[in-house]
Length: 133
Picture 1 (cartoon, rainbow, N blue to C red):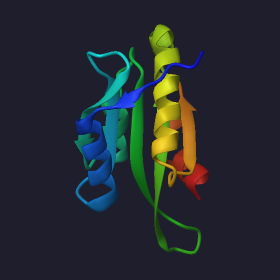
Picture 2 (cartoon, one colour):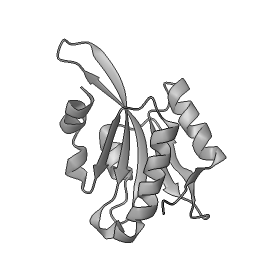
Picture 3 (cartoon, rainbow, N blue to C red):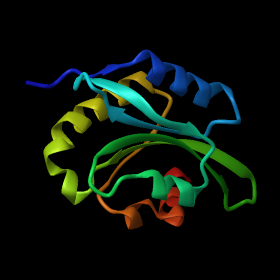
Picture 4 (tube, one colour):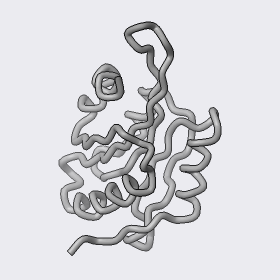
């Protein structure tokens, strides 16, 4: 049976800020004290390097990130990504975070680039641009 994960009010507010403001390009979510609710852990304007550094090496997280890049024709593009971060050390958390990932996909229907990453090199900037482009 599939586990149901809810979104906290703080999580919903952060996702709305991401949609509406230029000051926010990244929201990192974690399971909260109530294990079936996603809570905002980070809301900010992170560089790619800061995003990678913000992800714990031993715990799963969910990330919504607006990637900015230049298209092959030189035009500036922005594409939102939904990332399930599940490093090897977070194995027992994978089921719960996968349920959260599914809930976020439903909530963020406008986000078309979804990926699972188990190590930082899977989030290399050029790889993300290739997926978004």
